[in-house]
Length: 331
Image 1 (tube, rainbow, N blue to C red):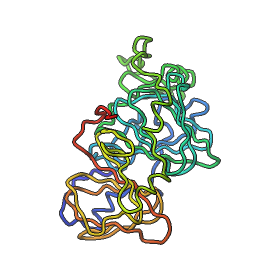
Image 2: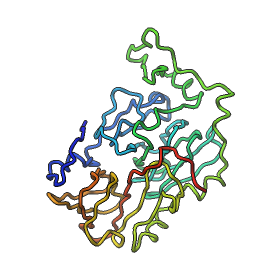
Image 3: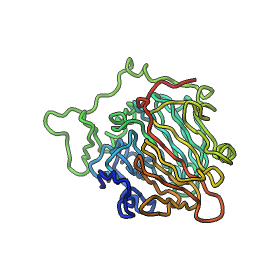
């Protein structure tokens, strides 16, 4: 785990390398959540890239501890492995890095669903139960942006998920930690199981119909590539394709929309490469970013971006904003 305190005006290559999480270096956790033993969900892998995320397991590796006002994570799953129904108190945004994915939502996962292809991005409405499944033929990977420094304080599970997990040996304590009876673990003295949501509490989780989700919460990669032909495409912002203020803003950059001159910003900036190889240069060094790599660029650092090879090149750029995590959506 890396804790970053470096704010030098001229960081060295070694300094910046601590701010880059390479796709090939990602360390998975297979016991991150309560459904880790539940058939159909027991092969998924959770990755915590920037910030502590929402993992419930002490086995979860955190690559970069410092948060820029949001968290970055990822989920990797073999074909037809699913992530169980849950909710968050702040924003949860996914884009597909590899594969083909089905996202579904509602108390039983039947209120609506949408299929995402590589590069597509989904800003899941806050406060609804949601799940996702790899429906491709190969191992798939989705990248996640979670609002807030503490990612909203954890996961809220649909009652049936907690009940199914208990039948397969995993109990979630009211302290937010998992206990595995298959490993001889039990709830510590004084710690009760996480209570199931009551029928009255469940009324606060809407059964949002699909017509309220599409197209306002989904952006297709092909459309964004066209928009980013000569300027960065505003993906999630007040004036974005997805109009929202979740505590961060998201843009898509392509070969034709990168700034011509070096630039700097007072915001934290996280670069997440979708396609191609990108050369990042700054006063003091340079690095090449590949698909799946994540780079946290500190505020105030003059930097320049350029694709380093021919062919398709795209990356998502995420910046923190002054909006509180989970701010009200602007329609």
